[in-house]
Length: 383
Image (tube, rainbow, N blue to C red; front, side):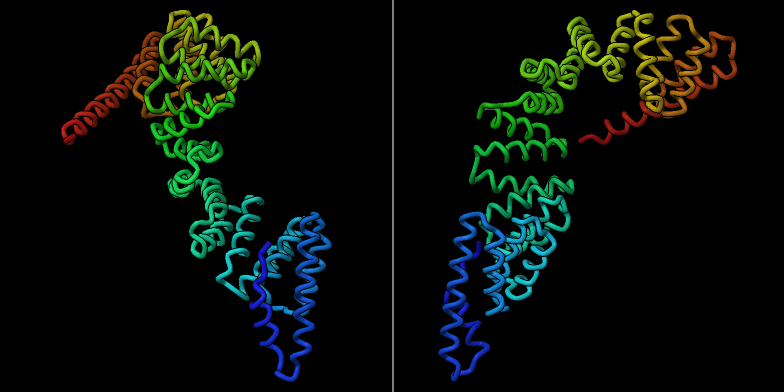
């Protein structure tokens, strides 16, 4: 609640009276004081309707008391009368623009309602008036994250962390913001600080693993994901992440174990089916890869990787007709990938369609040469 300076109300009362009405002013001032005290009492008891009535009584006496309008807004907000609360705060701002309270309350209410874009202006105005208002800065950071202005959010969070370096919520918010900006090393740093505080969830360990992997520290990421799985062994998302990292590090037996467990827990998990199918294809067991890749391609028919991997698996098992169908679909989805044209061209030539096969191989060669030339040009320009 905003506290009313006595002199402020006296000034308001005298502004609307003549000298011959001094006694009346005194009585009105006493009434204002009484209503203020009653409102404070009701607020301490969380009786927000009682507080609302007292603030309205104050405003009948001094309609331009910005602090009373601010506190009325709080009472209304606590009763879920959001529209009336916003109107009260806007009245307070119109009367006294330099008063921080109504700007802050308006911004906080908008953040609670996920109206992040609208919340930014009143929260920034609060900080112009009170630069050290951490509540406003924290709400502003949350609003900026909400509208995906992550660099701006990071700057606000950094200022808060200077004052509260062990604030777990701020550290997690900072990590989220850094991850969205692909600033992985910074995300690793703040997540390490958060994990050192203890009481870390499986999700937090998994996020730490994602940050480490993004920073090209995949072996460390694997260890983070092992912690995550220990804390939540039935989480298919976390266990898939562990299996994927084993696959990425060519630890295929361990990857197979984790991916099998994901599919046991959730048989329809197409991501796990694709990764396990690709693992079997990579290790030369195309027959076991086909049903898994079929499941993935059915779930993700518009993804190059699923159609391409299935085409290769079918080609390896001798099902050339279906392989060509899948490879054609893959090339149509991503015409600029040389390997797609190469595999399709090879399959077409095997089935006797030499002219079309040659065109596909020529296209693959053209794309590969363009890629080599672009890489050579980048190397030439590199200082």
